[in-house]
Length: 308
Image (cartoon, rainbow, N blue to C red):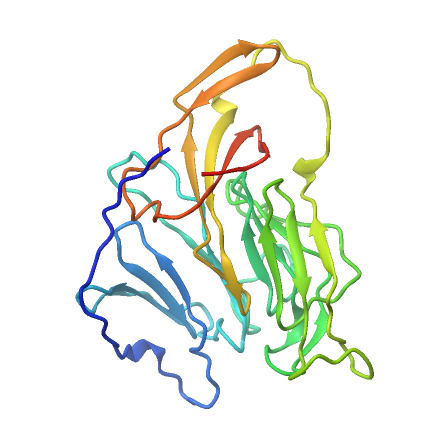
C-alpha cells in the first residue's frame, strides 16, 4: 500500500499571533491545548476556547473564521472537552467533506439524548467509524484537584445513525479516570484505558481520587465472538479502513484519523475466505505519511488490524 504526498511545505519556521485565541480573562487560560486537525485541503483546522479557524500555515493566513459555538462557552483546557475528526469517506470525490465533532467541556451548549455532562473525556475513533467517548468527570474542571463526580459509563457515538439515536451509553467501569487519564485504540479493536492523577505528585492515600496506575481494556460489542456460516458475502457491507494512531495529552488525541477506503472488489477464494481490494488516497492531505492500522470491516465488525 502506498500513498503519494502533496502536503504543504514551508522553508521558514515562524510564530504567528492568532487573535481568535484571546480570552476575556487571560488568567483563565481557556485557549491552551487547542484541537488541531489537518484539513483535506492542506490547511489546519484549529479550535481553542470557543472559536475555530482554518489556518494556512505556509502563508500565515487565516483562511476562514468559523462562528462561535452555541452558548459561547469554552471547550478547551481547563474547561476540557475533546474533539475528533470524523471518518473521511468518498476519498476519490472531487470535494471531500470533513467534519469535526466537539464534545464536553463547559456546561452550556447542545444536549443530546439526556447524556451525562462530561469534562476531561477522551474521544477515540473505532475501526468501524464509530467514536468512543470515555473517561472524565461530571463536574469541575481540569487541573489539580478540580474534578468531581467521575463519569464511569463510556458513550458510543454512531455518526451514521439518525439524529437522536447516535449516542449509546455503554457498561460502566468501577475505576474513576480523572485528570491525566488517557485511552488508545489497540490492534484487536479494543481500547486501552489508563491513568488518572489529579495531583501535583503521585498520591495514593488520603485523597479523594488517588493516583491510578491500573490498566483496563474496553471491549466494544463487535469483539463478541460468534460464528456465522454464509454462502455469500454482501459486498456492499465490506469496507477497508486505515487508522492513524494518536498521541494523547489533556483529553485530545493528536494525529488521530480514520480513512474509509471502501472496497473495489471482493473475491471469494474458498473456505469462507475472501480477498478485498481497496485503493489508498493519492493525497498526503488525506493520509499524512506515517504508520497506519489497516482493518477490513464487515457489517460493522472489524478484523484484527495490521500495521502498514
